Length: 221
Image (cartoon, rainbow, N blue to C red; front, side, top):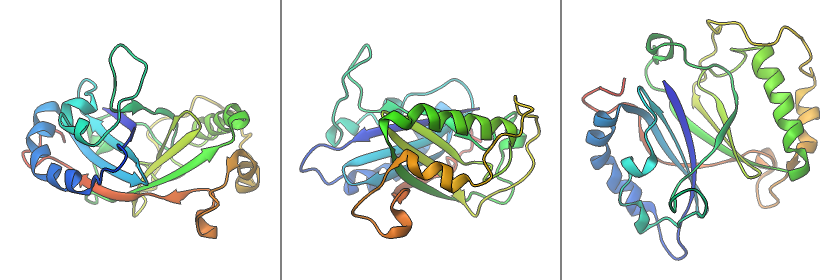
């Protein structure tokens, strides 16, 4: 099982809502054939954030959305121009160890996405603390919660209601150094959003525009 997080940016003057609405009917066959499940797209302004899971080898977003060039800009870098840039997994509450372990036993949760901006000089500190947390206390939060990083942007994917259960493995650290006053230690790491309500000053909510837990024929399970 591979977990994939990507970021994209819409072209100026393009409303992506019609495109995402049309994908619902197109994606089932593609996801089924590619072994992809748990796909969600979130929108925040002109930016799109994508999460999905691959049961076999990693599949690229262009295989799922071959028409996305209609609404998305190309990113420089890489061997070829890209519509989607990968976000690095820098924190997860659990990692999948088997299909049975990763199965949503209570049914598919509601995907929930949030976005934060790190101060560039605080990126290494943020990763340090989160690796410590991840490996000292696996299973401490939503089983499916994961944070991806691209440049200084953080995309936090999780599901509601949260699934909190013990991880079936031990972390890689035997220390106990995670700060107890976590929020106080984390707050100086962020550039706050000035145009958001107070409860979203650090982590602003993204709009879920597309969600397909499993393709109808089920190969992605």
